[in-house]
Image (cartoon, rainbow over all chains, first blue to last red; front, top):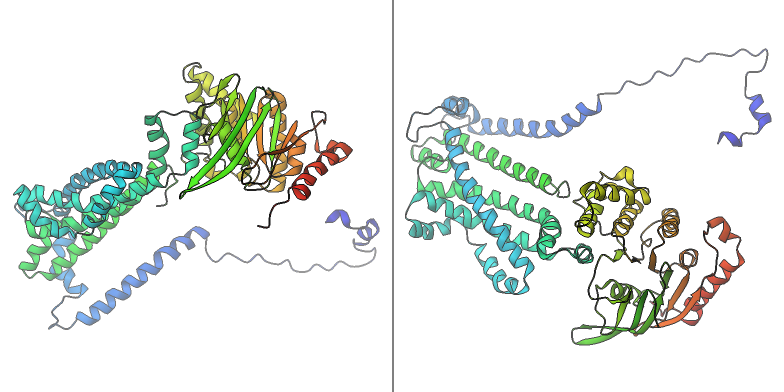
Length: 296
Length: 263
């Protein structure tokens, strides 16, 4: 509060005539340890990298014995070098790089999950909007959603008699339930205020649905889609193991039968990374679709 | 009894788990065109229910509401509501929130550029044109309420219904919003029905103050004519003995004659 300083005091504050003004060394500004951005990157990248290196080191130490039944990281690198370095080779049949296996699994997921998303959102809206549909269908959904993916496989084989549509059906039926249930929750939890806004504006039923209900439920729908895409990735790998053909699940089973454990480890890493990428992809899509109101 | 907006012998009761509770009992109130009427009462006295009846969001058990010689049946944009918690759609920008209302109400009568101009005009009226592109989540509570007011005004309503519009705001923001509403009321000349529990706010803004008795079966206890000249300013009312007189009348009603039962 400069204004509060009394005028007579303010005059005295200057150096008195005759008094020597001693120059003190100016305080040097302390250099910042690191730029803020680099610090943030290091803070989020360093911990997982350090843990990863530690895990690899422990793993290598545990499996370095030549008699060990399980390969360590170094022997995996030696044995599966071609698989790691070149994911794109194609020698016909099932002797292909991992990229081709993953992409054929992904195309099955895209189709099966796409159908599940469509059916799941439609069913979810029905169950969320209608009290009677909810009473009638919700118990059925709650039971069916706990059936594990592979339990559907015999039924789907009996229905379709072919590997490809059976795999699609297994993906469809496992990933649909979380989408249905979350969509229904989103529609049911619609704030009454939003509905009142629509009623005051006299929106038609279609406008109410597309302009109020669907956007309000979008964050819930994408929560369901995220859980669903994770489950469909679980289902495809498991069902391909039994069905055969080109695909990452079958590749893993095939390498097990050929006792190539190191190839399986490489394939597992691919499965994990692709599953993570799928999850991030749907989360980003959700953030875009809900225009920033959904958490990702 | 007749008025521009008249609430005639309205009773409301709700039924929950087989128990019928009477909320409002034969309320009649006539409001003239351009009049600013506040309804004040303790919480739970059913004043919001009365506003919802006028809005058409709640159907009365008996009685009815007549606006401009037509009976109210269901909600509509000629009775625009400013909700207590603003109720902006969070996925739309402030501009699009107002635009949604303008497109719906004037879709058939105004051209695209006219509608854009009308949205911007109403945003300017509440001094929010600068935040048009922002999402409701990115602006303050007071700004959200301003957008809510702009959305209601943009419907060009016959009556503006304000449901405790400043209740959730801090004192300073509330004062500036009250001034904004007073100025808009003077400029646009709209009829306003406002719910409030703030005595100063009611006296400062209103032409008449309707005081409600405690529920259940709440009714109108007293109506106070506020004969202060307009435009009013805070400096003016601070020095105005009649302002204090009106305040005391309302306070006396609320705290002496119809004190809230222990909560």
